[in-house]
Length: 264
Image (tube, rainbow, N blue to C red; front, side, top):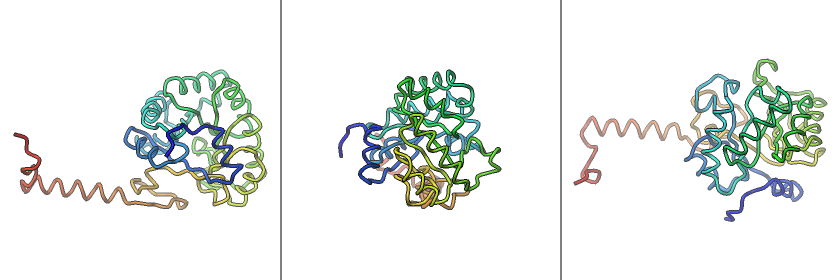
């Protein structure tokens, strides 16, 4: 496997060639190493860290400092995949200058290769400003977890005209790719066929240029409800629980440490 870093040009070439793209979240050193070693194209340090790692009810509490902290760790762990870090709420709504300054901090202090921001066509000027500063930007339309209260919960977004307008605006403003979350498969197909940049789906069906999942959902480590669009490829929660119970029992029965684990 090549160790050359994946770039925005690689993602655009994949769309042209019809090669599906892959992106998975990571939040720390071991998961960053494991996800990168799997050969995925992108590692996303999502503001989902607020829920998955910190136990919050939504992504809204994620802070810029928190994203920089986790982003720097993952960027050091990943040597091949493009590392993308989320711009947390509400920085993309505070004006172009604030968004550029925050994105620049993320890029400089983490060593990542791109930022991702949630937004509608109303944030096109922010995407354009960040891209003009030389910072690659990934868009995010459809269900936007940072706007969960405005959208009335984690609901499928079905307004095809609005979805297409938001995706087009992101592409025209200079985004190099766009995440499509929880939208009808036919809407995702239309957007993917219409815009020139890659689409990466989550709960958006098979017709996107790529797919993304939260690592903890993918490996069965999530402690709360798992979305219906997730396929779990392992049961890490069960494996960890069984290991802890077995270790505790060995300690109680004085079977651990044994001769192999005893020093001197």
